[in-house]
Length: 385
Image (cartoon, rainbow, N blue to C red; front, side, top):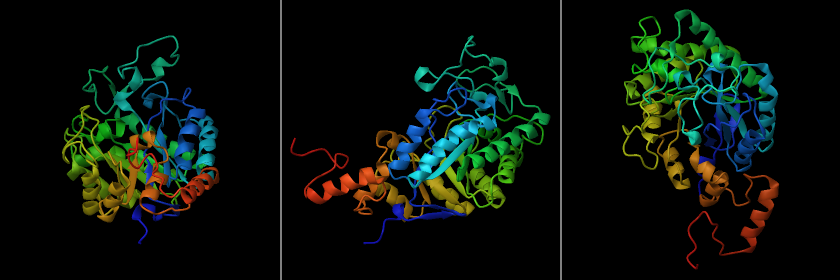
């Protein structure tokens, strides 16, 4: 039987992923004043030990103003490097590739954590740098959720902000990450510049599609100036935001950034109006996969599919049909951090449990060899209960 595509290696520049299962970046809101904690080591480490090919750590902010809430990771200072390097070393020790996403929350900054309501934070004595934690955006327009009004960035401020992405990329390299992703989706700052819904500027960063793309393109250039040429670069986009930015514009942006050093477009949607986008069909299994397929087909660039990809055969089908090159999972991995191992078993790709570390592999392989009619709990409900 041919090896499933999901468990074939993927080569991106000089980086080789052992399989095409990617841990999508997921905000943990668990940092201490921007510093990584034991939670980050555990969280990233369990996915590496579960067999994923690439583990992308969460959106890590390039400046203090860009923090979404109290617990965001930071990379605006060299002091953050050692804590992240600790996570990198553990990910790599378990045969996964370490990646990180760089972002800036823009007008969606200074909020409570989602499980605390997600609304605008209130000024308290515990936040001793409130004035530095300023809401900035391309235009002085509040987010749809009745958030406070942000300050529009001046034309003169933008180059320095672009360079902060570049310096954060330098720090990510020094920490040892092998894959870098720029967060250009979900209503955060880069997306705010891209979408006419949030960008009403009348200078060279607003108005036309090309002008609104300028900020993103310049960030790609600044990142590539500090991120080694042999390391891959991803860009996450809300391919459809249901607010004026859609697949046509996303294809054009992908064509612009590909020759500037972007290797993969991570295809998501939404985030601007605060509601799910259903342009690719109802919210259901793989509902965002058509975005990845279209960008791959029309922009001629590798893509990563994400969005309710839950089952092994579902992920394999996406690859077999040529709709994407990589498969990213998020909440399903929260449910089952060993999803890659489980998927490999279901697809017959790893009879010796080689995807996971020996303390797991030895006992699982022994059980599978000794117990003939065993059905693991993730396969189906027991029929003999």
